[in-house]
Image (cartoon, rainbow over all chains, first blue to last red; front, side, top):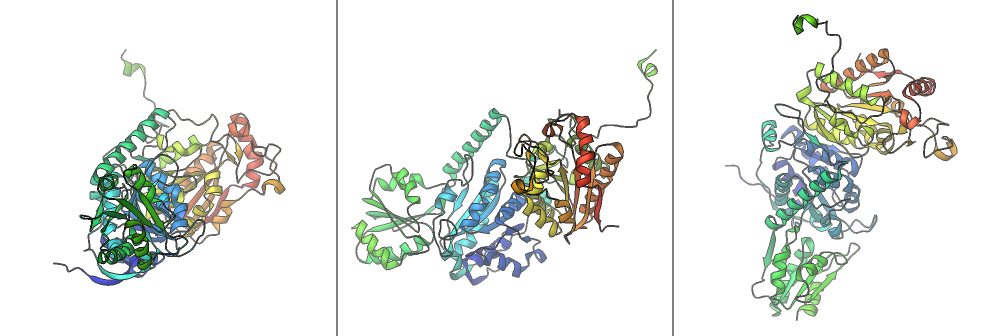
Length: 359
Length: 255
């Protein structure tokens, strides 16, 4: 049996290697800090010589996402990666993918904003990613890794969800997770799907009109009744996803009097701070959403009936806290602590914050 | 007398291509799109590529090209068809991948995608319909609108100080290393239609034989946008468009 390879990797490198290993057919990207190692790692690995995976450095993020649109439309497992301002530029392609029901994966290694902002880590794209981001009524999957290991692990998960529901999936990372080096157990190699497998699994894809009627991938209709029906179909899909695909992790929550909610690198730092607080007899636990959309609304609502308060820790001005408040609906106090502009809280800082709000 | 005896079968000299759907076209009378659509349908059928053709339709009048030609289609965002085609062709190298774009789509909002896809030498064919106006949105100024030409957004005529100059993107892409075949044709008479058909066939062959990128510009009419009759549109095109956009091959590395 093939042994799993263990390596010391940056989160960005881990995601590139995981993409090759999970049968990704194509990567299309444009350099931007702090995620350029993804394209660099792929260029160095030359997967086109081994698995046959296509790698293209595009002329812009706009071109990258439209290459993903084109590749996904033909049933291939394709992806792009970028950082916050680049993802803003991609919103055109993402809403087209949502409308035409085209699967694909977008990795967002977030940096501080608004505007050109900074190259340091941030979680300021929570709104941009969980609210659809482009025009029209739609959502995309938003998965939040908190380690280099999860960067690798979430790759195949993102493709699976994207194809199961025919829609884009975003892996919402940040400059800390992308840049820090950790031990990573790489996934085992999984072959790319054959054309026959794609024809079977993606009967909707534009692969050439062979033994079937022609396929048309479009988000356009000038018939308002048709378009409302299409929207109702999308909303039904989102309802089903909210019901079936929510994932989160609970740490020390059984006896917790106060609940921390945090994702990604904020959760890593909070985890450290919670350990210290526990030593000081502050009974605090954490819920870490792995899916930011669909959001773990029900789980948080249940906690809001048990705990004295909820503290949301984010590396932004307070974005996920809105979803928490919508889940809690006033059942318990909800507080927020955040840093911005590329500043990341230290564990000591969070110990003070937790002590203030949770004791 | 039986029906067969009464109706004598004549030799077949012309038929509608089977890939052209029996759908009423939304194009205006005198528009060039219908002719070019027919040529594409004919060529794909003649080349036996029906099962391996992927068309990328644009935003503009030809957005509904997918309703008329019975092959697989991907409808692209405005100007992004070459990027969509780049991925489709690289992931399906044995397929025919072509884009069908107007002047606003290809030479304005999609200039970057056009130039970079063609410069990378992606093995795609680009059909470029240049009628010097935005037809779908109601006749606004295009990047290819001629100097002095009146449109709804340059109602007093295009002038350099206000609007800049018409863009000859075909001349630009002919300079790129990645293109193997760049030509400018028209469909205003039978001879021109035949030449355009040969040009598109060659562009499709280049895509299948991985020779690099091809672009076929078709200088076209828009009688609605130009506010002329179909006959006047053809005359106006010959008098005003052809001197500025001369017909013929700009580049052919396949010879």
